[in-house]
Image (cartoon, rainbow, N blue to C red):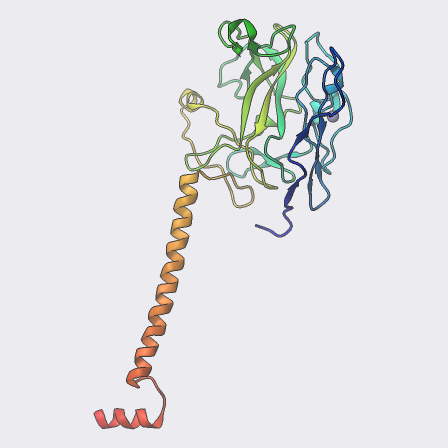
Length: 305
Ligand SMILES: [Zn+2]
């Protein structure tokens, strides 16, 4: 790990509840607690947007590690807007960076170390699904409830509303959606972010988004990966490959990590054993006097010869 990589310090671990007495009908706004890093980057935890516009503070951070201070407005009559201001909707979250992978086109990396549960958005104009050979990055859109803004249905045991709710796709092409460049982890790798099934937008609307969250700390320059699903590969006839590189690693599966640690440990043990053997050999030689460069030894050898 390079020494320049900042260590993440988490102050009080995320959200804090407002301690002020709540009046009837008043929505509690949580006060975020920042995550700071040694190079003065402050990651402010992003609050989930509710129906209260006071919670609609843009989720993005600048490239220098400061939270955007803009508040988001409704764009298309949706109950809750996509949680980026217009600027970050088109330029993307500065906490992330799209770089050339070298082998696989482009990939998404962390510009600076990101904490677990960092929120991101897959977003784009809503439309019809084209053939995957034509368009590769569109994701299915399941609009939230037009009143509650939630994808969970209280009339159906608060279950996620998937059945009969498909409403085309969100196509991120040409937008500032950074998540569209995330790779799918290879056979020896694991995902470090995932979708939550929280959508923004409205049925037959112009624009929508889907929430993603990191599920572990993402070190600076590491890739952000999420599992595309087995259907993605079979539909394209493409073989899955590991995507991590030396410059931009992807997290390895635990089994692979364990095997690698075991290999390294075996290597170390072998070295230690060899060292012991060598020492023991030297000791034996010394004991027999064959390797001792003393006059006595030389004389003894001459005698023996
Ligand atoms: Zn913003």
